[in-house]
Length: 358
Image (cartoon, rainbow, N blue to C red; front, side, top):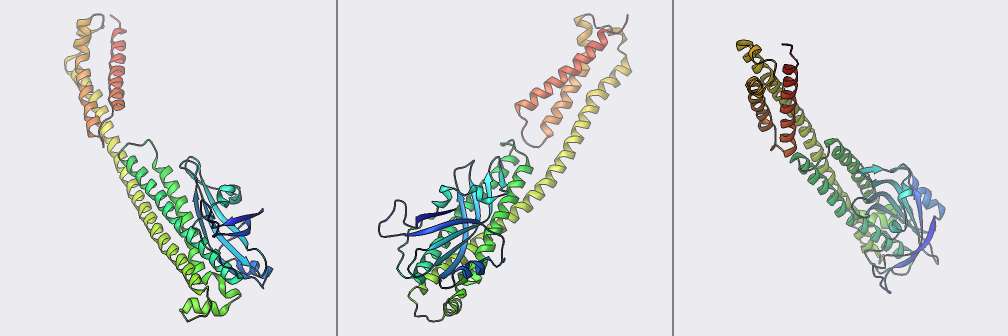
């Protein structure tokens, strides 16, 4: 799919900025797969740059993340050729899900993301390719801020889950955390490779490659822009490294939380077992000592409350113990459930006592 678009003219567009280019979207194959040289061999006379791609687009609930590369090729007396290689994409649909075909998430909104930051693009194929590549690298580095916002959202979700303010399983938070980590690591790989290869400028200009890599003097007027683009790739790599480390710490924290949840589950089981033993065992012990035959059958109010009072009091005491010993403050739903349990227990005993033969 190839379209002719005006890139990096700003929003709203600046008449003196931006450049028209032929933009193509393709599916990327992988890291270090030699695709850069394949693209270069299509036109070895063109000036060639490759930079990382990272985009976080859309509104909460339907956002998308795309990771890959952007290949810029500019030949003399022709418009720039910009190929967007999408290696992986994620869509937000009840959590983050990786798309089987990342190109399905590429649309006009994604293509329109190559509008900012606005740049003045000079004439000359080498300078033009360098400025476009630097603008793409800068826009990708700017997208790291939105990735950081996604991590903040995960931390907030986890905090609300621990505080019992969100009815969400840890499993769903963990799944989104892993998917976001995959996106961050993939984008960081692309940024690191672009910085190490100096945006693949060596494919057609080995002198510029050494000048940018070793900070040697250069007469090329576009060399400062090439170095600025290289710094954008390095900054993107450094920032994504921080995000990757933070996500790893969050993953370790969730492992600790899982262990704590298991301990809480054991605690709950012990409390419920204690409550069941108290609610059933103590009334049974009382009735065994004193006998319930004088109150049976339960055919009058006087007999009923005398027979069931020990059961009601003991059950209320046991249930209260469970409610106020559980982690967190007891909710209204918990209290209502406890009342229903006590009523059911008393109802069963009343029915059993009423049906006892004379």
